[in-house]
Amino acid sequence: MPSIDISRYANKKPARPAEIGTPSAENKLLAILNKDISFGNPELSDKKKEYLYLELGSLLQAGINLKSSFELILADQRKAKDKLLFETIQQAVLGGTTFSHALKQSGKFSLYEVYSLQIGEETGKMIEVLQDLAKFYQNKIKQRRKIVSALTYPCIVMSAALGAVFFMLKFIVPMFGEVFRRFGGQLPWITEKIIRMSEALEKHFLPVVLGVSAITLLLISQRKKIWFRKWSARLLLRLPVVGNLVQKIYLARFANAMRLLISARLPLLRAIALIREMIGFYPIESSLAEIESEILKGRSLYQSMSSFSVYPPKMVQLVKVGEETNQLDYFFARISEQYIEEVEYRTTSLSSMMEPLIIIFLGLIVGVILVSMYLPLFQMSNSFQ
Image (cartoon, rainbow, N blue to C red; front, side, top):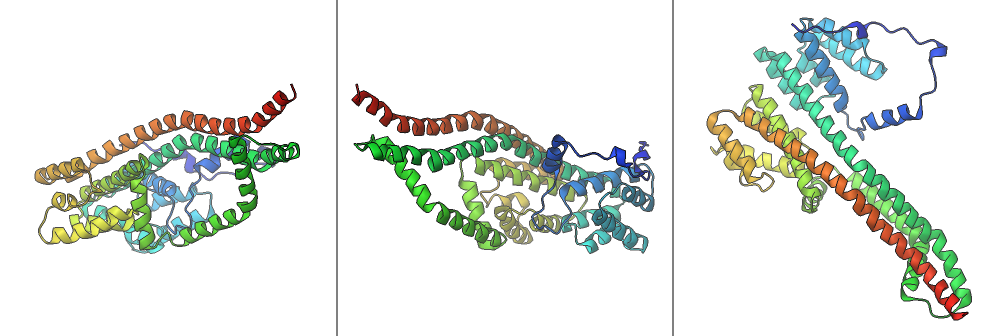
């Protein structure tokens, strides 16, 4: 039986004033990067769910009962909000409510998790389900962090370069424009175009910013509406490179969720219904509703999936083999692993490719602006000779 180090769960004494210092800039940055942002999502963050399932599964596997396990988890909580949530769940369980129902009552967990745990309770495989849920959220967090890490540097370079271009068009070009007007004469074509761009920026900057802000707020307010989710997903999938990457990210999540629910012995239709509620990607979500009705009419899962372009032919064929051999959970696990590896590879490759391209592209823009400003000065110097 594996041993669990519970020394870290002991009550921690408050630090003395001398031990409390101002956190370093590096620690602050790490805290910001590791913080989960929920954007108003009422559910518990993925990071906290991973912690709960991982700790609870390890403690139960070590032979510690559910009550004692929750007491140890509570002792490790620092935020009053999290401690209150886990205390509420603990009290519900001690009052005779099942663990899965206690999570459902809290309103902080998805039906996908609730029904997975309910099946684990009914089949005596609670520890296995907890470990699978922990692994599911570990992979989800790891995938998100890799994508964020790969895209952070290109985004920073792009933002800094665009800021430099904006500064030049807003402040530097108008200064040169005033000088050129005083001297008169015909300006080079490229110089005239750059000066006109600067004047347009000066004239329309505030209306454009207000317009973009209004459109952004409108889109945020409509982001949960069916029409918005449908058209935004369709637009996203049509983007070169990015569309295929997004598709594979959600297919990996779909396959991993199917693996977990099927291995927990949940009926296929119930598993599809739960995933439809939690997947959060309209093309897959809408297809699952039709796949349910097709299966009820007697069609197999792979036949129903083959009617939708969002599922690649290779994935459909693997599902077909899984159905024929009664090993759907195994094949969904293979599909999930393949897509996760492909997403990680493509994200890293895309990041490596974007960095020099962004630098070259924006370097050319800055170079064109500088040359266009100095070209009239060279002409003036030649006229004085």
